Image (tube, rainbow, N blue to C red; front, side, top):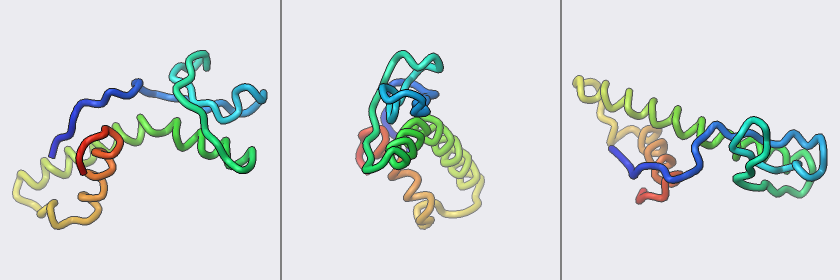
Length: 104
């Protein structure tokens, strides 16, 4: 199963570590932390930083999940397994589609 090409800002992304209040919860697309791609919210400083780390991991997680699902599809094409009946594969495929703005 293939989805549309990603149109997001390429990763890796980095979360501001909160050493100063202006970067707390900020997600950057460069390691020098000059170009912001988003801002995380939270009802506490710890929650805001945890959300920023999760957001920043998005491109890496998407890339890893795409690679894993491609490998599973290759195994299925070799005659092993039935991915359309595998709930974990279907959930992974749905997550990829959600991240890329495609149909689930």
